[in-house]
Length: 321
Ligand code: ACO
Image 1 (cartoon, rainbow, N blue to C red):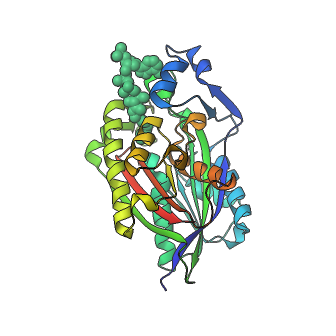
Image 2: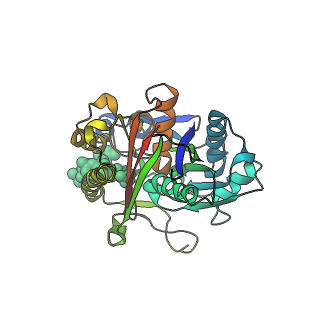
């Protein structure tokens, strides 16, 4: 029996401060109606001065460890998907490792924008399958409120802050549960459709998120659809086998488009974008955490995850809980 990764722990963290569309409309030329109709978003959580990718990621990780019945001493690796690290280095993952009191194992970040969690999940799964790690914390943690241009109504209304975490644990035992497959893609030629113009290596730029919304929307629907097909084909499964779609939460219209393609009724699609907005790499683990804890996703369910983000990067993952 080949080794595979079980999803054994789930955790999430959202900052206390909630900002409604009406609050944004009080300082920008926008409206609750415009934002809701175009995106499905009604509110988002925004980081306070004390919240960082490290602090939020560590909080989500603690909850995931507790859910799994493990402690930090059991963890061999921490992999964090983030585009909003506290520092250029050390990696957010290393800072989280320290917050958790872990001196063992290894930790590093993955920069794949909104697809960061899928890329981190695939990487963790490879370490587990190759025998280099047994228990891995996979985290998405983001503070986009610090990289959006708060005067640009076309982008700032779309994002929120938060963190989500999953514990992957290797097993050699026979069984159907676990991460079945992951599928990753990127296309750098579309890099200018969604990017942040600046970083510590380019201080001459503003460091704000820029986006060609319509083009990203078009790519999202096409690439996410082919990505879910790819995942199901790889496992010889069909749309009707999927219990839950847990998509990256960017826009309700993109989510509904993919759900419709799968023939999944809306009640089989986990949606948090209405309350969280787009939390980039944190959105899938936050949605997973919510749906597992409220009992919607149960043991044995087949869960399909997909994401697309700046890069462009995109991918999917299929797991049986
Ligand atoms: N409030 C009011 N009006 C607005 C706002 C706003 N917040 N933002 C833009 N507008 C205006 C524009 O200025 C434009 O006005 P004009 O016609 O007078 O020029 C009009 O609304 C239409 O603008 P579009 O950008 O064409 O609107 P569209 O219908 O494409 O919706 C949106 C914009 C919601 C950004 C959409 O393109 C989208 O969701 N794209 C996907 C992008 C995305 O989700 N990115 C997240 C990261 S990638 C990912 O996670 C998948």
